Amino acid sequence: MALRFNLRTRGCAIADVIDAFFCVPKKGNVKRLEDCVPYGENLASLLGASGVSGAVVAPCACSECPHVWNCAERRTQEVVDIVARSPNELRGLACYDPLRIGDSLRWIDKAITAGKLVGGYAQAGCSVSGLDAARKYPLYGLCAKLRSPMVIEFASTERWVNHRPQVEVVAADFPELDLVLVPPPETEAASIMQILKRFPRISFLLCPRELQSNFALREYVEHQGRDRVLFRSSADGWTHSVETALALPLNLEAKEAYFSGNAKRLFGFLQ
Image (cartoon, rainbow, N blue to C red; front, side, top):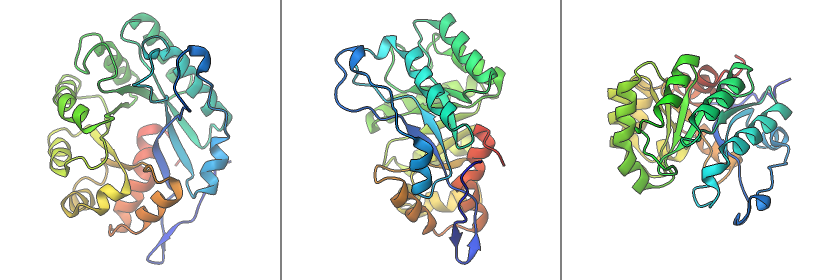
């Protein structure tokens, strides 16, 4: 049975909280593939203790790892294994290797079709090709065909500035594809709202403090873009992130959509 929490705001019960982007953590520097120890903690129990009822698991962020080019399948399998231990609470994303297009498409298609994973994952700037390169297009086409979201992470402001135009090209070329962007902290709100207004199938994963600190973005989310912004935890951890989110001056409908409604719809959590 999935974990459920009756969170309240202003005396009214609201929906569960789903962390729509939990990146598998790695400890220390990986100099050899043998040093890359699989994540072995019980993620569901950690969620429950923090007031979070579910999470979308992304492959480990290894932009500094010397082996990033040849372990996409291994990282994908790790996510599959993590999700399999707690299938009610967790959903997972698949890695893609642009140098092994055929193999990548097969393992992603197999995992999503079997219900083991729910979408694709890529990190801007962590690849031999840009987001709008021909080698990436088979991945977007597959996700569109399977009606699965494509999550793209931007690990730094520099990457956001340099690669955001490529995302706009992809969105224009694949209007039927659900793109979910993970911008870096303190991203300029104007650039987020510009994309939300131009591309109806692009959503954003935002920490609550991003909404807390920007009135214009918060107003836009509440009145126009409530179906396009999803909760993700910050570096402060789940408990602090949930507390910050509960304090956001959003109406009940916007909070429900932000906390879990949009994640349930995009990533296939049980309603």
